[in-house]
Structures are given as C-alpha cells and as structure tokens.
Amino acid sequence: MTKRIAIHDFVDLIIGKKLTARKIMSLITKHHPGCEPTFDSLRRRLIRMQKSPYASLQVSIEGREKLFKLVSVDARFFKYSESASAAIKTRGKRPGAARPPHSPAELKYCHMHKMFDQALTSVRERVSA
Image (tube, rainbow, N blue to C red; front, top):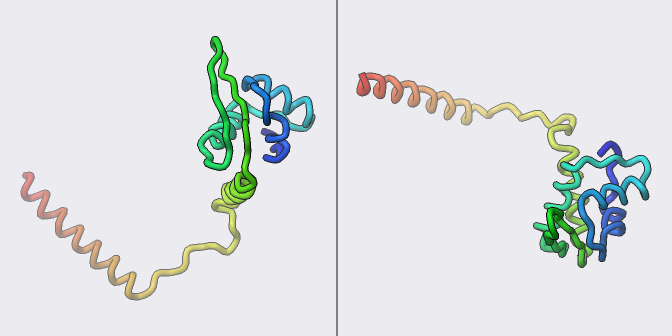
C-alpha cells in the first residue's frame, strides 16, 4: 500500500459484508482515493485478522472465489494491531540503540569458547582423517 488505511477504517469498510479480495480492494480505493493496496498487503491483513483471537473473520469458498466476512471485532484487536504495526515500523530504526560493548567477563567467556571450539575442531579433524 502506498498510503496505509487505518485499521478502524478497514474494519468499517468490511464488517458484516461477504466480500472477495478484489471487492475489498475496490472498496478501499473507492473510499480512500490515495490508497493503492496490493494483494499481498491485503492478504497479510486478512490473515492477521483471521488468526487474531479478538476478531472473528469467516472465510468461505464459493466457486473459485474466497469470500471473507468480518463478523465482529473486539476493542483489544485495535489496541494490539496498532502496537504491532508500530513495532514493525520501528524495527531496526531506533537511533542510539547500538549494542553496548561486552563486559570484561563476557569477553573472557567468548575467548574461552573460541579456544574450546578450535581445540574441538582440531580433534574432530584428526578423528575423521
């Protein structure tokens, strides 16, 4: 999606209606002109709704088409979907979140692990030869 549609608006568009993915996309572009969703982004959103314990999304197949019907949504769904999308947006983008340097005890442990691994590797090479 070039411009993401808010989850509240998305729910308002599809709740109580039995729609195909194409119909959902056309509703989004009709009611939110700046939004151009992709099938992949729509599919991910529908899968998240289907797996969520706070939303009841029914999926049925008629002919060759999958039909989606959003029956109900709990208020917790909005809360958790917003926090999840915020976490996805900020993943790896926090300024000043560099890994702190290792303490001397950690460095000593890493050095000992490296020495042990090198010794074990040399023994394995002798045994396999």
